[in-house]
Image (cartoon, rainbow over all chains, first blue to last red; front, side, top):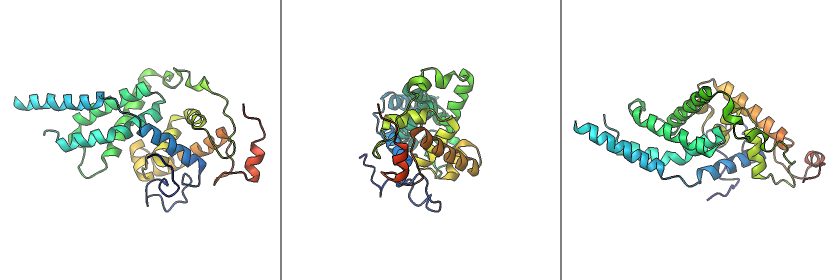
Length: 66
Length: 182
């Protein structure tokens, strides 16, 4: 789901509404910025992070037994 | 106090956004992954200082950002230039027919100073409010606003996008697109 539809990609809904949004749907810079960022967000996440969190969790479980 | 399973799940869910922010800041995937790892470890250690009900993503972004700048200070200013990023593509084509190439955009973004880049990413892409972005960056809201506006102006300049609003085959962009592409 990477469509940069004008209706859905205008940033945080309601939050920036008061300011005439200079990075909104009508801005080429705004559109590219979201496209750039959305691509990064949708990148595959390496397993190492989930493993890291599991290790932290296990380390804590061991500590708690003491 | 033990870390709750909910906290762990929330951290897991935040990883894609954290990585995106880390890559945007460091412009380097390996460095970004190290930043994310460091951030997760710190968040885990400091979990008690997180107030449930407040914005976890903003809290994590703050940790990641602090880590980024502290690593940068340690390494000196070599961080950004070490991989030849600045020299990689000095020339950026003018936009053509309203289609701005994403690669050109990326290289333009690399050329912004970090403070401007992070501001425009937080506001324009990560979905934070100006208040939240100011808190993440530890500065005033007005400072964020001015960084965003300078970043946007600079990107427009680099990418030779004319005008503030929509972009298209209007008079001004036609003038700008006089130089041949490639």
